[in-house]
Image (cartoon, rainbow, N blue to C red):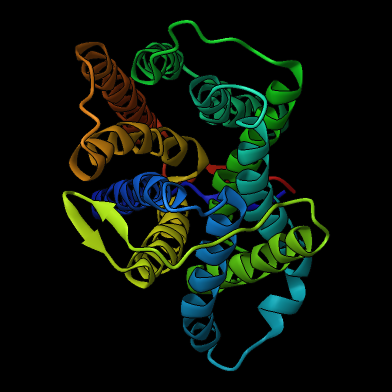
Length: 326
């Protein structure tokens, strides 16, 4: 089991981790409105995901190589970790979600996928003995209520096949937070993000070649925020920002905060997606969604305050599990 000295993380480290986690959530959320614009011009979800991850890998890979400083031993030691990260946190999350929405509505699929913080808390409790405190349980409850309101599940129906695919996406998201928190692998954050995206892009490419993930594209410009944007510009933002920046900042947040806090801050992505859809696509959120966003953010704050209290109460010599799968 990976271990880390608790050593009461400095307030500056926690602040930087929170900033990175929010940046990751917001950049991830930008992919939804941009992808919706591409869908309207004839792009398939599989094509959008494949191009997004492949471009992100292409951009981040050189930085990941430079971060190794010529020492490839961390890569050799962590081959299985990189394969798991690429397969679960990148490829499975994307593929399973789009497979789920082919069988059920988007709202329930997202609700299941974004239950990942509860899965992370459960894993850390069962596997590493990190029993959740009252603040964490209260934060989970608030976040769950807020998530239901934001996603507006009125009239939603569940399909067993769709639920199974959505659970697969939830597992992928949970793996993303748990692996990000592994601070003692020797892999620089840039190298972990780059390796994961390279593996993920390769696996998604295999799914496309095998015909399991339909791929169709179009050269038509995209309508966003009342303007007409060239398709290459939308794809560039998708690859560089919503994949490259999002994964790199996500790893940095996980290293500083740990799996549980970063997974809860990741729920900001849901609120940010609603706001960005309003700004870019003109999809005005309802009062219920706005209220849900406030409740969800309150749940995130409760969890963060609870973790902060735990850090202050923990002796500096205590050693804790980092909260990642073995």
